Image 1 (spheres, rainbow, N blue to C red):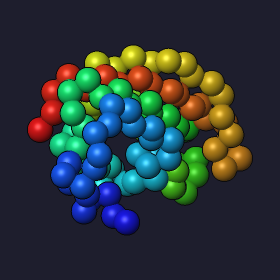
Image 2: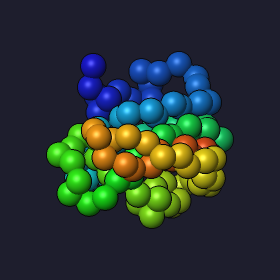
Image 3: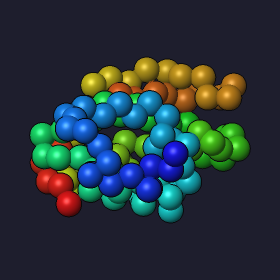
Image 4: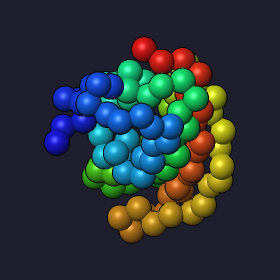
Length: 110
């Protein structure tokens, strides 16, 4: 299905979200829409385990898209407490990049 068609009424009660490859699969304009939509779906106190990738600019043809630490903080930091859990080197289509795991705790919901 299409995540943008899901409403809070469609979901059972939940308190955790695992995003391993959704955010990094989306180009920037759609990524902002996704983040805003996720905010509307997640109740306060939901925890999100988010894994993002970062790599040198123009090194590969996305997806996956480069989502640097600053972007996570800028977009999720408005409504979540953002904690970086760890960062490790990652092979991104043959290019050396990094994979970062975050724990996001929802403080505000729409």
